[in-house]
Structure formats: structure tokens, C-alpha cells
Length: 88
Image (cartoon, rainbow, N blue to C red; front, side, top):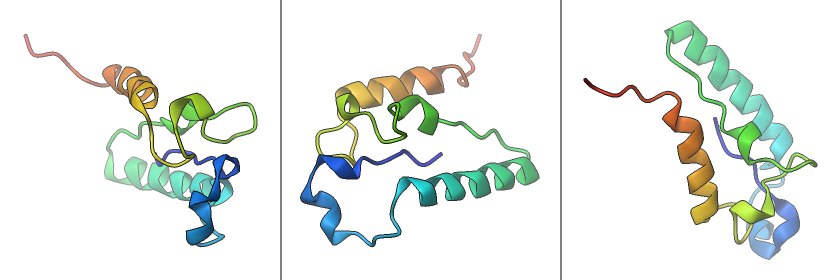
């Protein structure tokens, strides 16, 4: 899935199109999920693990509201670990 964003964190988003928002990301994630089902591949929802109670990217996981920091990548890694198979 595409990660959520947090437009409340600063001016970084002034240069992005206004339609780049969490509502749009949720719609795109639904389309990605449908495509994954059709192609019989695993859809991994990291969006929900990164959002705060308002549906924005949790501020602890980012510096400017778009890119993840170390803690954010740690959170994503923990989600992905559940899908990685270890070789014997």
C-alpha cells in the first residue's frame, strides 16, 4: 500500500497537487488491493500501521509529513516481516 501523509506538518505540501491527500491515497490503495487479488499476489497494508487517530501519517514516523524516518521504517519492517518466509 501507499503510505499516508500528514499535510499538517509543514509547507512541504504546498508544491504538491491538492489531490495528493489521504482520501485519494485510500482510493488508490483499494485499487492496488483489487489488482493484487486479480493477479493473485499478496497485498500488504502498511497504511493502517502508519496512521494516527486522525488518519494522517503519525508524526513520530516522519520529519516533514511525507518521508519516513528511522522509526517509521522500523514500523514498516515489522509489518513486512510477517510476510517474509525464511529458507530452511
